[in-house]
Length: 205
Ligand code: SAH
Image (tube, rainbow, N blue to C red):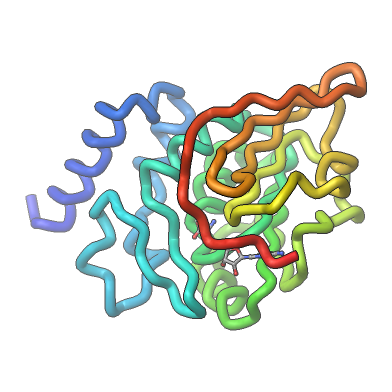
């Protein structure tokens, strides 16, 4: 086994021991998507380290643990329509695309043009991902409502427009300040659950 394959395997084992790959579909997606394809050349050798990495514009690709934790909390499933706010490298979008499959759709939004361009290159092979160079804090009404919404930058508060664009029975995972929240919309009401502390780059609002 070469070193890259070895390092990749070790990272998956680490995530497994951290309890964030319990869902079979999530685990399979992590096995399939190669993080090395989503990081700049300069940091390629750290692709399988459980740490966030710089992707330019002062932004980061999240730590693999965080991506797995948020993905698991989101309860994604085949055929769903998912909105992501904060495409960054495109890694999280690729993981979600593997889970929703060919009958699903991932709409991902990136406000910074150089990162939008970076993600478009990284996600070339994914036909079911729509990448938009827009401010995602307002969501994307054209494809709404969404089964799932994931925000990968820290908001000051949960944007009202995102709540509006969440389906009845839908789930949103969003960092508010340094607190990660899981939000469920049921019978028109919003149920918010605190699920952990995380450090994120700020959401531009
Ligand atoms: N999900 C990404 C992590 C990216 S970090 C990944 O897998 O790599 C958060 C990203 O959110 C940054 O790229 C930042 O530019 C973007 N962002 C910040 N505010 C935003 C907004 N209002 N709309 C869309 N993207 C935003």
